[in-house]
Image (cartoon, rainbow, N blue to C red):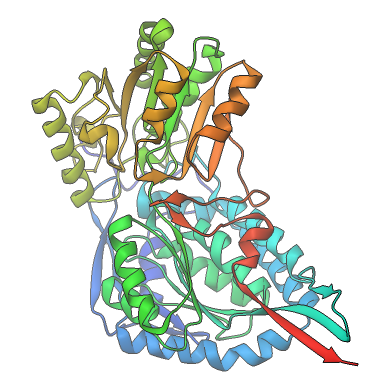
Length: 496
């Protein structure tokens, strides 16, 4: 029997019925006005939990993007000239509204991409980032430099119109990562959310207007490749911040080259998670299981390569598989659900193909999962959390970013070997190590490739910089580095 839609969310303070359809009906947001119909056609959005059509999403065409950039340019002088404290107050009010609408934001995310309510409070998370950068608005100080014969100083200035391309697996959260620091620094923004998940972005923008953000300072134009290319190629866009896959990033780089537009790129990952014999296995095993199950594996920094030392391999694998099998899979609106569906039918089919290939080719020993789920979940896009053991280092499932709930477990026997294996990747977004040996922890922190290395747990949030190396991208989101991506340094010399 399929999941019943009528009773879904009955325990919530927000009524899911019609929520997505209502946001979609309001259309694009340009210059503070809603545009119900875009010039890029429509996209049929299906609920990943049930497979049922939720809404027709208006897609922006190139002309809509041009209108949005024009609105942002017209709003720029006044927003840039506004006292930094005043910009900060607007962002603080926005953070308060995001927090007040936390449950609504989390329900939107569950309906648009299938992320369980138990995993993350989307509104509070985004509020934390927005509030953090609201505090930075009046703290972007420059420098006075000791040069002979005059006064030399450096000032930080906004770029102008920023293009923000947020990812579907956390579209509202991406607004906190990209849009909040860009606005705090005095830029105006045109945001292009993906057609797969535009609804949280539109709610962020609506709440921003309610908080007092002037019309045109933030514009939202959902769309696909046409809108994305138009935004990146636009001559009046001064900088672009993009999160997505490597293949799309190559197209973004080529498009940005036309006007030498600077970029921030947060791309894919294949995080190595390393367990040594002296690790606290009671902590490391649940963390490793949750690490690839959360978001149904649809996260760039999730630890989907698990390297386990020979001495503890059998114990870790046995306990890991038991933990994964006990992890609740189901409707993301239910409070006990930990693993929801993947984003859409195409992703489901793609992951199924990768699993069939891995099993047929013997890329590893299938320990659990490996299939699409049926029964009550058959109409949704559910992939069983899957673990392959004894995976070959060169197997596809050990090297490619699958973006599904699939874990590859590999063996190692010594420190040098595992560092070489972990670094043998085009990706370098993050790495994770479990050990009680402090000296080893520091050695591996230096030796492992990655913008983030976590020892016995992870840190995050707006106070730390996040970003990649190698083909995982460049630039940073979070901390002071995150807002400095949206300012330019101007040097001024005054002759005495």
